[in-house]
Every structure is written in structure tokens, then in C-alpha cells.
Amino acid sequence: MRIPSLLEYLTVSQTAKLIDQSIRQADDCWLIRELTPVNGKVPLRCLGIELDFSEVYDKVELNSQ
Image (cartoon, rainbow, N blue to C red; front, side, top):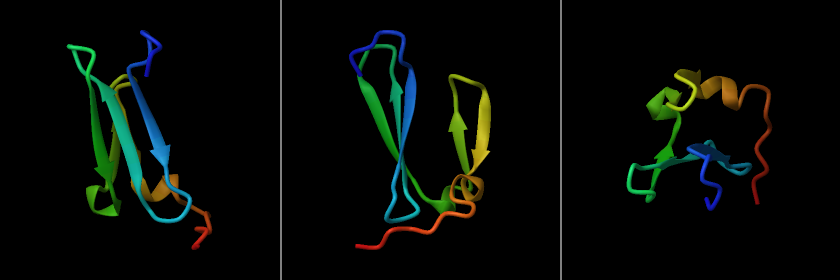
């Protein structure tokens, strides 16, 4: 988060279908969104694309602890 050129990143859970999306705001604060399969898409604003949530977890066996 301290890298000035870093605009956005994803943290993908290994135990549940859950993605945290962190987006740098104009005031240098971070907006953190929790995305689940209900969202359907994972928008990556900095690249101008969307990932299908289901594709992120395609062929992944979740580690339940």
C-alpha cells in the first residue's frame, strides 16, 4: 500500500470463495471491497477489465480448516 504506483490489488482466499479488492482513492486512502460469487464479476479498474468470479476459482479445491 505504500508503493505510490500501486492502484489496486486483490487478496484471494484459500478457504472460501471470497476476494478482497483494495482500490487506491484520489486522496490516497484505500477502499476495500469484499467480493463473493454473488457479485459475478471482479472488476479491475486499473486494467479496464472484468474477471468472471467463477474463473478465479475454476479447478481450485478450497482448503477448509
